[in-house]
Length: 241
Image (cartoon, rainbow, N blue to C red; front, side):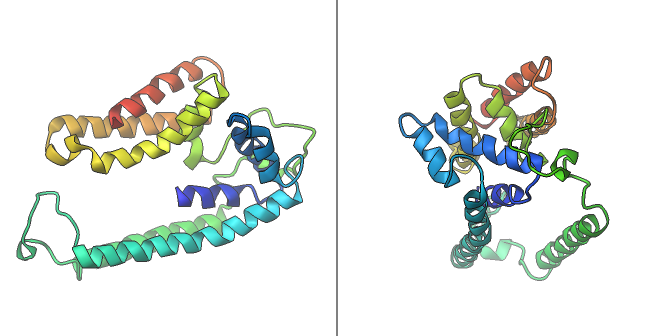
């Protein structure tokens, strides 16, 4: 969730059409809060619309949150070092487990090198590969794009948001779609039936629903995309719960 916050406040920093209207739409979701909603929106903006104070605040958040993520990583490493990691086959003795060094470390380093290489190639040679062409245009508060959509890594949550007609209901569903992921590690069914074929089916249904929700999020809000988005939003929640 911290990574998603960093990605969002970074995506709205370029003064482009999609970034501007994306910031307007997402921050407007707080207006669904009863009583305090409109005042909360203006407080986030620092103005009566998305303007320079908003961008300054988002830039500060975009700079600071990665340090918070780093602190969480250090806490995670400290906990992993003190308690050890779990094993999918429920091994209790450390002598039965495989050492992290050097095999897993080398695998992680190789994966990191591949991801870094692909990222560098995209940034240097294909900078507009995943960018909406509308975002190249300078932000214009008077003209909204025909189809406002977030970046691809937010599309699944955006589909869930727009699948519910009620504004407050959509915001609640969006929040639950993220918070519900905390249920997975603490679910007693997951703990006691790790090798159940039923859980494998649920896992692949969850992957399928995530991919289809991501695809639908990039499509216009019209039939049949709207109906498909609602159906797979329901599947997303049912496969987790």
